[in-house]
Structure formats: C-alpha cells, structure tokens
Length: 280
Image 1 (cartoon, one colour):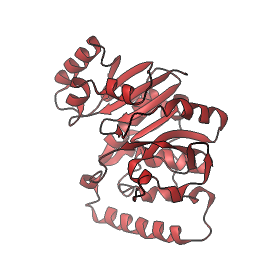
Image 2: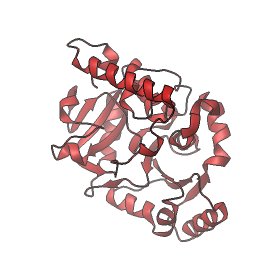
Image 3: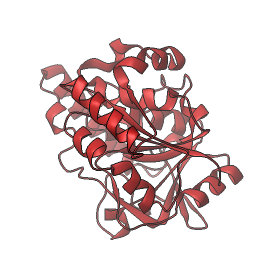
Image 4: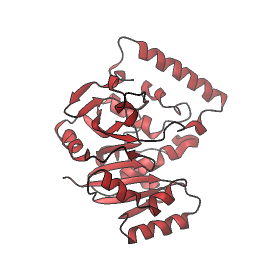
C-alpha cells in the first residue's frame, strides 16, 4: 500500500489522552493499517513543557514517531498557503492546526484525524480510498461515513440523500469535514484557501471568520472536486456542542449569521442551483 502519514490534532483538553494512552497506536489498529509516520500535532496547550515531556515519552515507547507544535510550524504553513493570521479572527485554532498539518514534511498521503474521532468498528477503508482517488481525479478527500448517516439519522456532515453518484463502496458528494479526512498532501499544502462559496453558510461560525473547513469546501466546489464517503465504515465524533462557544455575540455578526441562514435555506429550496451548490 502507498505510504500514509497519520496526523492527530490535539490541544489542552485532549493531549494527555493522546500522548499518555497510546491513542495513535489504537487508531492504527482500528484502521487495520500501518502508517509511515504517526504524528501528534500539539496546539494551544497551557503547559508546553508538560506536553513536550509527554510527547518525548510517547516517541521513546513507540506510541508515536514524531510530534510538532503548531506554534513552531505555523509560520511556514502560512507562507506556503498564502493565508494570513489576520484572517483567522478570534477562532484561529479552527484553522491553524489544519494548515500546519498539511504542510508538515512526510509521505504523499495524509490522514488528518481529530483527537475526539473514533471508528465505530475496525475497518480497512484507507487502501480502497487511495485506489478511488488514483482512478478518479475528481475525488480530493475521502472519509468513512458519519455513524449517524450510516444508521439513518440526521447528520450535518453527510447523509445518503446528498449522494451525487456511487463508485463501488463509496458515495461521491460535495462538502468537506475536518474531523477525519484522507488526502494527497500536496493538494492541501498549496494556496487554495482564498475562495468563498455561498455554501460556507452551512458552517456555524461563517459569520465570524472563514475556518479551514469552509475554505477547503469552497475550493472543492468551485473546482468540481468531490468527497468520497466509504459506506462500509463509520466514524463517531461528539459534535453536538461543537462551535457553540464561538457563536456570534457581536450584533453585526449575529445579523450576518441570520442572513446566512436565511440565504442558505432559500438556496436549498431552489429546484435549480449553481453547480457549486448541487449538494447542500
């Protein structure tokens, strides 16, 4: 199989579990795969010395192969992608880690994984995902199916009624989630982050600042790139409270958010939509 790097994003709330409980080895086991590099990407911690000590210990016992701090690597990632910190607004940590992850040195294939994400059951979805992307250049990212969608429940991330077409065991669709995604590193470690699509209003924080998810989603939609969703595997993420602490408090942002919701809802009802908004 092609070499794949696993990069797990971790921060103050999660770094002790990630570095102390051998989480990356467990992720490797449940994916039934062997990663070329198992990288802990550490961001926004209160005690850097403690995080660095735990990361060093994790390397020594073989739980991870490498670690990096976003604060150290972000300047190079910003230069490589053309993004400026002023664009982050007050919610920079929803973007800085992902830009850094894509710009780390390593294997051509990159699996980005949020520390709260888990596979519902062990499954080798990575090898067939790479085969899909190699034979269909439209597919830019692949992930397992959100467990809610697999079980027929509502999911903001993906549902079967958003499927554009089927390719083997994969549903092809528009959209992007940063909770878990496999990609070619070179495609995201590039200046692709300055396009804006009306579909960005599906992200709760769109009125505050354009986060990584919305930036990638916009570029994919404008360039006819698709997301592959592996229907025989599923992942879980405690998304219910995600982003609520950063919902707009400033009146102007609240008005923008309300306008975005109304516009997005109206667009979803249109029988004919722009090509970039086929799936909402």
